[in-house]
Image (cartoon, rainbow, N blue to C red; front, side, top):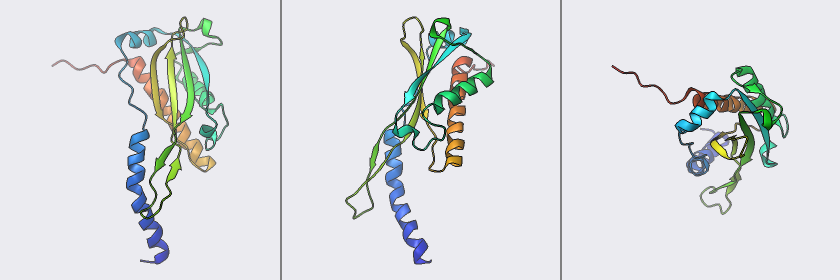
Length: 182
């Protein structure tokens, strides 16, 4: 095999286990299943207010569309779904959905023999479902936010993340899976 191909391939093979371990340590914690009370609240809600919780500066670096992209994409996705009426103020809403983009830094060990590690920033979309009267959190969903270093790939990856988040909201609305009786 050609040396120009072999060395980068070897480096990648040596770095891959470390990246895998790092991803496991910074993965978003799985959301516990929503309680029956939360399912009832979300299922009965007709009007929601979508709140923009903002995005961390590093979060928007590789997401085309700027600092409001998570809010804009989720708003469009919820509007297209048509399950909820999106209202202009929290006072009009049965529930508040707050979207926020965050990221965590993770240190990954460098190549064997190298003292330097690699720092990367996995990004997450955090959706909080809030009670409009008390502003208390009823339920939270955290998922990976797809990003890429190129605009077209980053847009596709981020749009898929919003679709996944919308699907998770749909799962809460549909409640626990029904088991069939024999």
